[in-house]
Image 1 (cartoon, rainbow, N blue to C red):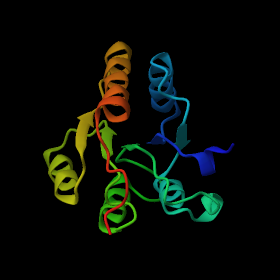
Image 2: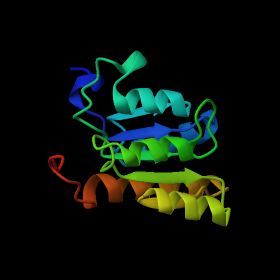
Image 3: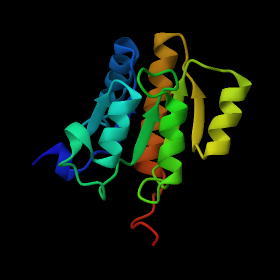
Length: 152
């Protein structure tokens, strides 16, 4: 069994190793991190989601249940990742949750105009950050009802 072929529930797109580790620990505490992939920049996220580059063997028809996306990323920023995902028929239905330190009104507005499913400012305090990520995981993996098959 390979995570590339068997599916991913959460794609974490985060360049800050501390924030990524905190998110993964919070999800692991709720048993929600078994099928999580962490990528460190927007280019790697696009490769994963479109099954190109290092992820060319991944089945694009088995998308993650949710993408946790930072906005301030190297190589390709989070807004561009969001833009590319939401205009492509193969990926536009994947739920995208922006989890970022930016609380700027223009970022919030731009993300929603591009089709983001949720926009959450990263809490600064460790306990609050852990709680928010845990609740995100619970909602998007256990409560939310995603489409079963892509609409053609």
